[in-house]
Length: 169
Length: 182
Image (cartoon, rainbow over all chains, first blue to last red; front, side, top):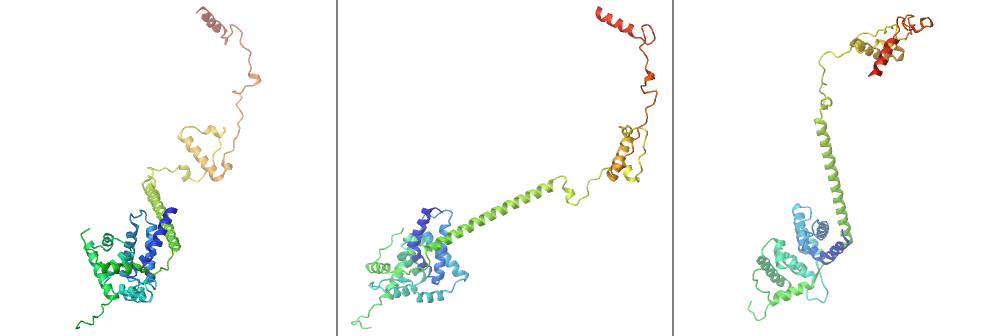
């Protein structure tokens, strides 16, 4: 492998590995998610023809591998993965931030799988709606609808509406 | 891209707040991943070489087998009986018990010739030499030359003089004269 190619891939790793692990943790426990991400990078490095857009390619590879691993039953079940995720928070933040990272992670885990996937890809993956549609094999409109629904659900989970003292109910 | 309605201010604010959080730090590191990638590439290259070697050897083996099976003498290797010559080709000398070669009065080479009898004789002698060694060769007896054909001191006669019987000098002179005249 050429040195500049190695440095380029190293840059991709430093930039995207954390978000990819977060993406894979929707289906897998943290250790399995890291294995899947590592395998995706190995696949990218050993590709005969490098993809034109490595970033969406990596997310697609992680999704494919994670779903395959889930289907073959080699990994722990989804419920166990969620339990492991609760033990290990998937998001980090500073104390000064408005949102609590642990609460945000739990709220994210409680979303509908389609909404959670789109929000993860959009917010932490930084992908365009078209790229998300290609990865999830849905239309852009569906992606947008899931994104809005997911944000609304997160707002409800993170900021429950305060009861109005003047309201009768 | 279809015309999508823009996000509301509340949605944008939540989007920004969520984006402020970062994914948990992974435990895999770049160097380990690079090492594993190199390992995988090496294994793939080795597998490719193994496949290429196996394919080449298999093709060569198939080619050799094909050539062997197509060769005209392959029937011998396949266990088929070798083609037989028509008629009895066994030499008579090989079927008969070996008998001593009669020694003639002249040298052994004088008995060999181009006739079939001489050839058979030679083959019998050859077979005996192969089996028994050079001792099987017949003893050569050198017979004395007959006196009538030999050149002895008593058989010398002087040249006949001119005019005597046996003198050819006049004929030779006539030939010389004819040559000069012509």
